[in-house]
Image 1 (cartoon, rainbow, N blue to C red):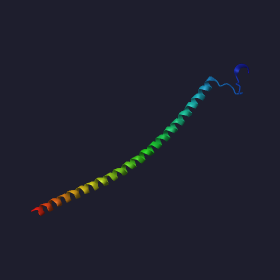
Image 2: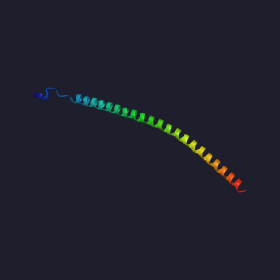
Image 3: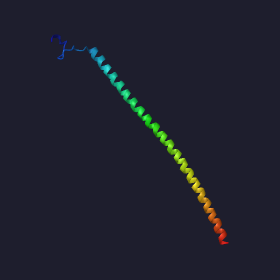
Image 4: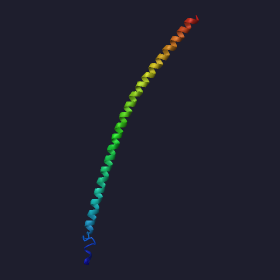
Length: 93
């Protein structure tokens, strides 16, 4: 092994330029994988948001129905109070 051209495994030593290129390629591959992971997380988050928006819309509709029911119940209550007042006044005279 004169000159340091081979390593224990039998392969040639990489030049500084080759090492630099290999490192840059590894960095690119790692970054691409990270981008894919982040895009997948973004897709999942968008899906969850979409489902949550649908749920909010559904709950808002239910809220409107209940609010209408409360208004009707209040109107009925007012009506019965007025009826009671009129009949009480008529009976007491």
